[in-house]
Image 1 (tube, rainbow, N blue to C red):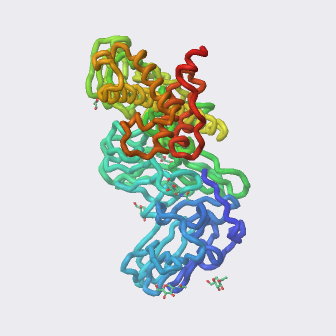
Image 2 (cartoon, rainbow, N blue to C red):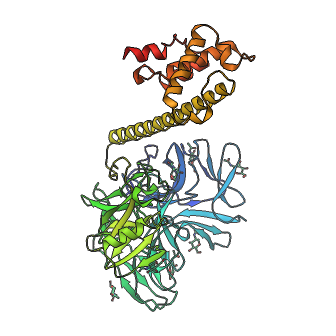
Length: 557
Ligand SMILES: *[C@@H]1O[C@H](CO)[C@@H](O)[C@H](O)[C@H]1NC(C)=O
Ligand SMILES: *[C@@H]1O[C@H](CO)[C@@H](O)[C@H](O)[C@H]1NC(C)=O
Ligand SMILES: *[C@@H]1O[C@H](CO)[C@@H](O)[C@H](O)[C@H]1NC(C)=O
Ligand SMILES: *[C@@H]1O[C@H](CO)[C@@H](O)[C@H](O)[C@H]1NC(C)=O
Ligand SMILES: *[C@@H]1O[C@H](CO)[C@@H](O)[C@H](O)[C@H]1NC(C)=O
Ligand SMILES: *[C@@H]1O[C@H](CO)[C@@H](O)[C@H](O)[C@H]1NC(C)=O
Ligand SMILES: *[C@@H]1O[C@H](CO)[C@@H](O)[C@H](O)[C@H]1NC(C)=O
């Protein structure tokens, strides 16, 4: 349950009559003084509350020591600075005005014409026109929370927040469907059975079913004829208790209660889905799967995958090896038992074994994973979505992994300390750098080799040696030695010009290159300069010591 503190609010916790509830055009609020309009009971207030490094506008429980946001205006807009104003303009609109004069409509209609606004005791912020008809109410635009006396009718949605402290739109939603079901879905999916992860209702209803919550916590679905079709709770006898229904950032819909005579926390009275908190689809992002960890959500990555952002589990996982080519001997299949996933198969093999399923995927370039269950093998492409561990499900996810890649660090858990993440990051960066260095070395090795062969050809074409072209491939070591020796002699005698056939070149640069070259071709690896040193040498940033003669060095070992 999100609990936010508003030290700048000086409302007392008592429920005595607090100020007026009727607000007239011309009134305004600022984040720091007169920051909200309270309900007559003082329990709810409409106005500014602290969010991130600024302020947001919404409705919150101001009458409790632990203040809770129940509605947010423009929830996906960034927080506003302290010099903003909430202005009930004389033409009858409640607008947020920046110091620069930019306006955002918060409540009321674009045409304006409102003559009063009131923060009602129910937690509903309502705007009436001059004919005293309600023209706008916050209850019609719910965010993540549903209050007693509010209605959720067909087509209306509650959307989760990003986190307890960030009320921007999150990744789960609960919809009052036309078929009379209250159904839960991740964002970005169609409202169809295969994407739902929870719900309540009974079949055969018309589109007149409404979700309602009574002041006593009685939560039910009621149809147009006034008949309750499903009781989700039966209500609770307690007096002085407030209730609210909220879809959490973890995708679970919970009914909370708070006893106003006690300074305690909010208590969970009911939840949906109630059996498995891993059920909300996409909780762990793509290529990740949810496991129960001490009754808490834990997220793991597929083998040889790494979490994209450790601070945000829904960001999912990405491969930590580079999948190259398609040769089946480069890959292996790693099983992830008892996990369920979205089945997005492109090919199905029936009456088969797990071994054959693995084999079939290994041989298929398009296959990146396979799901095996009851002798049926379905080939999949990445990403895999909506994964969770389910011990009662025999599905084995078979993941194609690199055979020769570094061992993977298995998954991640939200409670891991930052220090561990940090070390992991260093490890990953280190391994990447090492791999990069190896690649560079390999490339420069090839380049040096090619360069030597090429130089030899150039030189022999100029008739400086007696060796024929066709022997290049066969007697390379010998030729190489001769070539090195010749370069060294030219260098020693200060006749490097011979190397370039006495063409006009930058002598300094030529000498530098020759010296670096002689250092780099030394047979003893420990004597060769590092890549970084070579770059500095070629740049001229560091002096290049006189290289030893390749032959003299050879003769010393
Ligand atoms: C707050 O608003 C009330 C009337 O709405 C006004 O009397 C009072 O001066 C205001 N306080 C500040 C600090 O602006
Ligand atoms: C809230 O979350 C959204 C989406 O992740 C992000 O863009 C925004 O900056 C966050 N706001 C605050 C105040 O942290
Ligand atoms: C409210 O807005 C109106 C017009 O948009 C402006 O004239 C008035 O000065 C504003 N009130 C405050 C207190 O800024
Ligand atoms: C606003 O209008 C509704 C009817 O639409 C009425 O019941 C309510 O009393 C009005 N509110 C105020 C503050 O006049
Ligand atoms: C909720 O629905 C009932 C009947 O369906 C209606 O009387 C009531 O005014 C509605 N409440 C709100 C806040 O819209
Ligand atoms: C729901 O609960 C109410 C009383 O709380 C009861 O009258 C009604 O019969 C129940 N309906 C169903 C469908 O259980
Ligand atoms: C294959 O995938 C489709 C959806 O893409 C699904 O409807 C079907 O049930 C899957 N087949 C098997 C055998 O799992």
